[in-house]
Length: 134
Image (cartoon, one colour):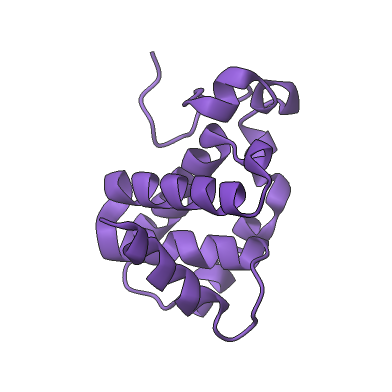
């Protein structure tokens, strides 16, 4: 897994629109999960988004917990959708287009902490249903 892997995925996702909004972020994550599986997708997306924010002069916009949580959300739904193409995947999982979906699992104040911004913070509002509870 290299920076080039992320750049290739990013180019594929932005080719038709020339932009990188929430839908494209979900598409990027979906591609990473499909091609590299979840553990590798977490690193690929997290490192790529962090570098993109840094290159854009906005490193403070990167949030490690948000990046990983979205990979986990997409991976969970991808697991249940099998080999659907991206448009079919979105049609079956329209909730993923809601940027605020993550607030079902996290309080916004938690996501604003230094810990959440720089490392993994488990959900504090509701656990991800696919993870074992402790």
